[in-house]
Every structure is written in structure tokens, then in C-alpha cells.
Image (cartoon, rainbow, N blue to C red; front, side):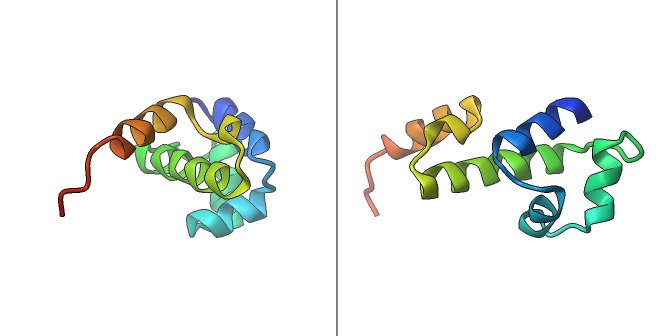
Length: 84
């Protein structure tokens, strides 16, 4: 994921930079730096926004918000019988 794709993902989720920072436990400045290419977009940031998309998509009943790979993984996990 590029910083441009990260911005597009945030906007698709309907979040401001401040809201995304709050959800991800980061500062606004850190989000701005990632989006402007001044800071490295790390795998942990990508995983966090993908997980956030799952949370928001589920809460809002809007599967189109969920990252496709994350959605496929969630569906696969949901199909596993609960034997516990």
C-alpha cells in the first residue's frame, strides 16, 4: 500500500485524519506525516487500517468499507466451527 492508497482508504472509510489517528492510537501529526510521505507507512499501519475497516464495516452493516482481503479472511474464520 502506498501513502496515496492509505489516504484513499481513509477517505473511503469516511474518516478525517483526526478520527483515523484516534482510532489507530496515533497522533494527528503521525497520520499527516504518513499521508504526505514524510514518514514511512509500515505494515503495522496497514494492518491497523484494515482491521479498522472490518470494525467499521461490521458496525455500519456496509461490507464495501471492508478491505477485500480482510473480508475474505473474516468470512473464512467465521466458517470454522466453534468446538470450544
